[in-house]
Length: 252
Length: 268
Image (cartoon, one colour):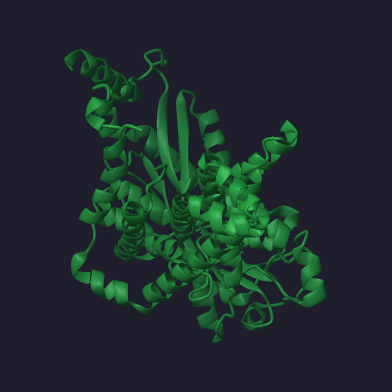
């Protein structure tokens, strides 16, 4: 019995221990900043991180993108991160209330909703009121996610009820349905329209002012590399305006 | 055949089997610990939860029915395909297996490209009849069937291969038509495999998320099934998501436990 059991236990221990073993050959000069960022920042933060790394030799930025709510839940559950950039001040407040921020968050960009339609605008959409026409196939975000809450606010501002055919889990899912031509119109952010290039057309509308999304950023308490984390946050706030604007974000 | 006795297994298997059980069970235990029991009843009987549950049960049953109708014949063909040219046989088998390894969201995109408004079949269908499939309850059933039918096909094929073909031959020699022999002799022989395949298929359809939300979308009462409601609930209030996940878990466990040991002796 013992002879049979021992190798199995050792095998399991090796398997488990192997996960924790760190490579010993890392150069000591390299520090890394782990950034948790909202999914809508995927493209622009990739570029910002590249410029930051060029200007700060020896500092490496590790980016982890996801829905703001999901990321904040991960942070509250103890996920290791040095910087958090959210697509919602409410979501950032959850992390702040949990005592997980080293300093108060700073808003570094804003984003507005736009109507996205397939190329050529087959349904002839001209404004937000068209998204209340039942004969159109319309995709919105679910009211439980930030883009859906924003959509509800702009429809309130116009005073009409949306005639949605599907309430998606995130803004990228709405964009996918517009890209594939499966819906006549969807509400997404201006940055999503620009990122999709020729595959969708964007139609700005005045009611979008009723729901401008703020993007706050902050250093996480107990950051493993607080100086580098602080430097990255300052870089995003002070030195990334051009890249953010190019991606469709508005200045704070 | 002598019974397999766990006590006679090599001792080395025990700790590994234990780790396997822990890996499967502990996440569910963690979920149960976090269930807000006081609010659970209110959250469960909320209109949206019941609506999602009803839709989920209805579509998963429909998907299981469609899988039985189409998958059992496919399983019979597969089980009898040994004499075919190897490339044909392998391609057919791959076609059955691919949905098992395909990320469900990719399956949803593939279904959109086929049956969507701009799809290979969907575009002419919409032009001819005005019918569009996405964002409807039938789209949910199609997505669930695509993802769950392979479980049924593989289970039934395995059972058919294990069944003695001589019974059907004898039935035929006694004057039974092929259809009669298949229905009255072969199918009853593989009933356990058929049932376990149907149960696997049903539970997989019940938990389907990625293909459904991509192909059918998510609208309360029309396409928002229980897993989608649970996922969306996670964004707004984690408590409701946990309660919905618990509901899904209870339904699945009840189905699996009530059927498995009573009627399903897999491989017996």
